Image 1 (cartoon, one colour):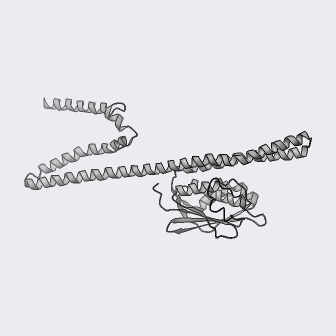
Image 2 (cartoon, rainbow, N blue to C red; image 1 turned 135 degrees about the vertical axis):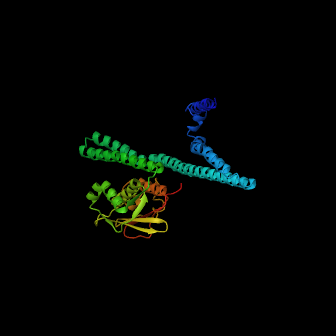
Length: 339
């Protein structure tokens, strides 16, 4: 009878759908693909389910309006159809636009990562040459001292070799931090500047205690940022101030923040020896070295700071007009960058 026919048809249709949605067969394989087509089909599935229901509701409503003129029913049906199609097109356009933004952001991250890898290779070769040369030089001097049975000189050369060897892991760690900062996906949260400064101070606790440095936070401010990455920025700037401190007076590091039309501008300044004016133009290059400031370090820390700040859509600079130490400013926008 009719009910049995309807039941058999529904069972057959349900079975066909199950087969087609199998992960390895037909339509299901396409839907589960990680491609743009697969993602679009997955998003369109609710529409495919909703459209028949909406069509049935419209048909039912039209049957209840049989007393209306045919022209009015036709106009109503056309209006509803056009509206539904327009909504569908708008929804699909917004979905594709969102994916396009995501693809652009991913492309930008890949571009930064590729640039970081290139600079990493150049920086690795550049940085490791100096300690390697020292090891070779003092190794030869050590051989000469041992040949002369000059034990005290041999010990001095051995210490120099050890110090050069200990410098290599620091260089490698700094370059790894720099390369990671280029492709790390940022996770934005509302964070107080005092919490970031405290975390950076904890990471630099040993150096702060050894140098007798003091950190002063002048104004509190909340930032929308990746707290881990911005803590790294502050820690690098604190470390830079410690390495370039003056020996004739206690080091004071002042951290301040103001809000302007670009976002939150954070300032880190110290009363150390400062930067050579010629160095400020290349300070954030991973190959740059601040040796003309009479300081220490590999210089990779400032390059890491620039990469992290740029990943937030901000800017970082050295204030060339500041006297009596060094002043570095960086800006964190209130809105997340689109790329």
